[in-house]
Amino acid sequence: MILAAGKGTRMRPLTLDTPKPLLPAAGKPLIVWHIEKLAAAGFQRVVINHSWLGDKLEAAIGHGDRWGIEIVWSREPELLETGGGLYKALPLLGDNPFLVVNGDVFTDLDFTALTLPDGKLAHLVLVDNPSHNTNGDFALQGGNVSRGEFGQGSEGEQLTFSGVSVLSPALLADQNGGAFPLGPLLKDAASEGAISGQHHKGYWLDVGTPERLQTLEQDLLNGLAS
Image: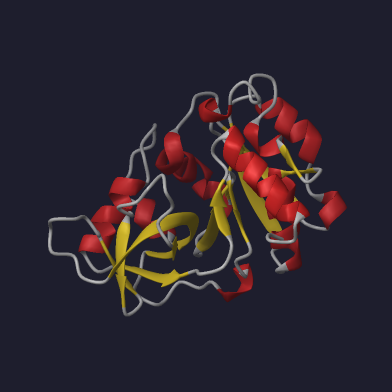
């Protein structure tokens, strides 16, 4: 699943008339970079949620024919946040663990290498802390993820959640729908030892502002990202 329902407020004015996933980097919309990588990795079905300017996103992307995959749309009349968006899409995702990719990150991560270990509710890809999140989100030690909150005795390397994960539908099973964030569910599951993780040391960028979009543009043109 690609998460693409946000309004992109930090990207304004670029997103006043264009959904953020369609903003171009090196001549290609951000979401197309993801779709191409997922198709190349062997994924045959991709669910994409949308809300803000969603009709434009659907019109531009279609149903996946040009990439040889099936794209299914999960439409949100009102923003449901990350957790709510995933919960609404569960009937489209099926009963097995599924890959989740934030639509506004860029990475050279090998999607084919991601799995969910037995007994875990989530597997998170973590990265070095960027300048806009210096304290990190979680702690990683020996492949296990803990809450990683400073001052609470968390052991391991403090890292930032990349926005890429493999989730079990069971993580969301006790929810009742509506709008809710994913973060607290992940924190609770981490406290229970139910989350595994890995440290990705390759290219990763949160493309959340016009300045970072320009950084990605230059990195792609200079061969630093792909």
